Amino acid sequence: MVQLKYIWIRLSFVFLSFSFSLLFSSTFSHTFLTTEEQQWIVEHPTINACVEGDWAPFSYVSSKGEVVGLSKDYSDKVVENVNLKIKYHVYNKWEKILDDTKMGKCDLLNGLYYTPEREKFIHYTIPYLHMKEYFFVKSDAPAIESMEDLKHKKVALVKGYAITEWVKTFYPSITILEKETISECLYSVSTGESDAFIGDTPSARYNMEKNFISGIVITGINKDRTLRELRMGVKKSYPMLEKILSKSIRNLSENEQKEIREKWMSQLQPKTNWLLIGLIFSAILLITFIFMIFNWRLRKLVKIKTEALEKFNHELESKVKARTEELHHLNGKLQLAANTDPMTGIYNRRYFFDVSAQILEVSKRDNMPMSIAMLDIDKFKIINDTYGHDVGDIVIQKSVELIRVHLKEDDILIRFGGEEFLVVMLDTSIKDALNLCEKIRQSIEKSYPINEERQVTISIGISHYSNGDTEIDQIVKRADNALYEAKRTGRNKIKIEEA
Image 1 (cartoon, rainbow, N blue to C red):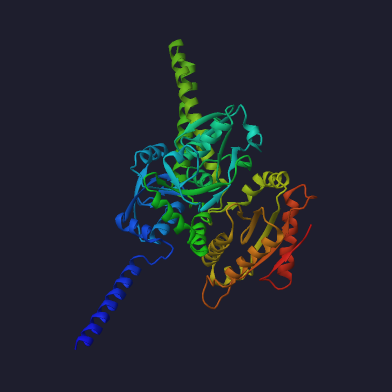
Image 2 (cartoon, one colour; image 1 turned 90 degrees about the vertical axis):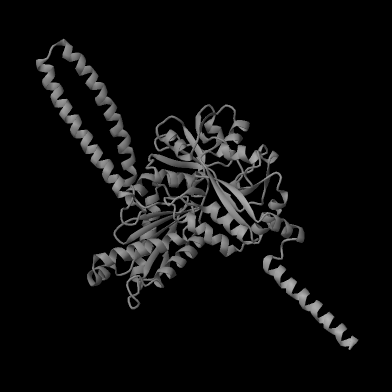
């Protein structure tokens, strides 16, 4: 009897140990954390993240009032993988975030770049994204190819950003115009207040398109500064949190990271706001009409009034001048609409020919490979004749969506004709261009945008930049010849024409 009782106690102990082990493993299912790190999470289940409300597409507030962006998706995934919860606090100014972090109010900054000054009050995680910096200038301004070209010039930069502190430290001869947001910096360049802006293409493109800022081009890569590494920052009193997050970042799968990058990097162009454009155009017509009426009355009054009325004439001319300046500003915003295809939201043929010389110059100067692909939807006229133009429009829009999914950050997609598209692939060899185009071809072949019986396919011609090319039209012509050959030999295929 005593022996049976002893066996029963042993079995109960084993059962309780096994149950506790299951409970503990369900709470901390990620074996890459130490016991000490797991205990820290139990004691700190929720962390406060301070984010910038106007740093699109990395972190910003949507029209629904929600925090969204690439950095937000990364931080959500990283904390979720270690069973932490996160609470977001939105700030209007980056400097205020840094001040509150110094005071210990912010547990986490989900996106920032390293500087030695910040290391005094911030622990940095390992990087989760690498970004290039570019020079942005007015389209009619001299090209900026290096930081040396900016000496004794004015550069617009965001107050408190890492690049701003770097320029202050290493290039004191540059005059910095500190602004609160990226869009303010871009406006400063477009109006001629400053000579250049230094930043990444995703946030710059997003702000230019969202705020209708036109007349700005990229003239080169900032090679004087190493690749920027986007990291997360943790307040100084939470070193254990930095270790946990760095481990979680390191354990993110490539598919998880690719999904986040493609979500935000391939959809940088917001939909064209035609209502806003209509309102702007109506305002221009109204102001023009008012201007004409005032001018007519002015001429009449000059004929019949005395010297006292001539003084009034002078005051009226001042008002007309102010309205003319306003018209000039509104026309600048409309220029972006002229460069964009209204159906698909991508750039149009006019935009390509406006920037083609600059694209070729960048490839020559940086000795960078460049490939161009011409894409044409097969038998598109039959689709229109059979199903109608509404269905034809859907096929074009769906094709654009599938093409953009596979493009890199710096690739440029243009609607070249009705069902014909052009893709400019910077820093891309002919082999890589072929691989990318094959993915596009397969995606469209499998899409069936009309119905389950009607298959839509696309033919593609590719060529690449050669040292003998003096104009980008030469590359486009070779790609067009290759496209013709793909069509002639059966469609739904890819052909290449070398220089």
